[in-house]
Length: 347
Image (cartoon, rainbow, N blue to C red; front, side, top):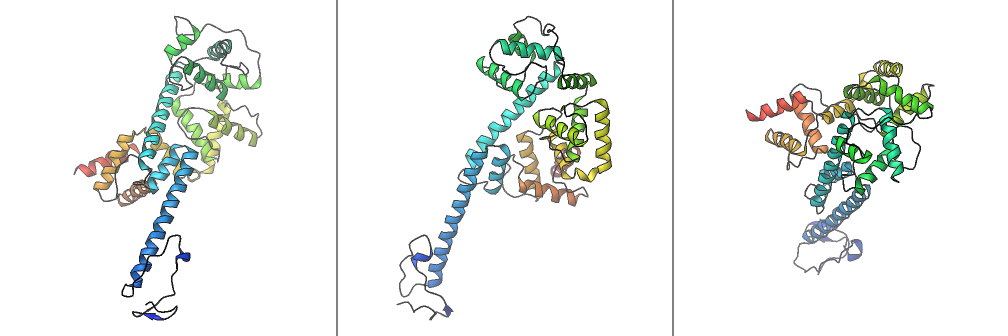
């Protein structure tokens, strides 16, 4: 029989372990069985239960969040977890949708729509019952939702951005350019939007504006050269904080002021976010990311599988590789570093 609590059992002092101390039933113990093995079995079972509960709680939060970043976080924590396959599938869908939206935005930007063009589009959407807000020639969130709803009604990809063919289809004209629209009642936001359009900002210039805003502490939701709702709100916040009219659109003078303010703040203000932006602009596909991971694995910096998801483990591996090669340990790659990494593995 087992000794009473506190008595010596085979050279070790153990308190009596009962089923009430754990969430599982304690196994039966024979007189000649090693009590240490029994306790070890119970401890392992409890630990497995706790780990499973943590994984399920994390997965529930990821599903509720629904973002690509959330699925990447799960895969980094549980690359072989019970929900890893579902996480990869959802992440692939989100990345494909984001890539499609980015391509659609670029296609619309190539149309170089004027304010009159945009007003004509809004009027047409209004006539078709898809647009219910003010017609001002400014493509904000409301216009994007209206375009997406119209696209869905025509069984087109619901990106919220128009290409040349969709523009012709929407306006019902053979030509690719909308007819001039009636004059629009002027207001500060419309005037500011037109003034910004007249600047003819290139995509690199827009990226620089977004980076300057980030350096000054304003969140633009990325620096991709596409001025969406996040960038507009960041511009408005900066304008308010500097005593200017908060239109959400920049003038030539404001572009210069942003650049000067960001330079005065210093490059360190942007920190690792600049490196992240630069890597994002490379437009690495998931297969290219997996190839990079495979090279890191081959060089001994990364363990596990190459799944194309750059989580904490991959970022740490990149940082170590950068440090060993005398580079800034940002954890994010430049185009030159990608080439160098590939060449090192080939040797």
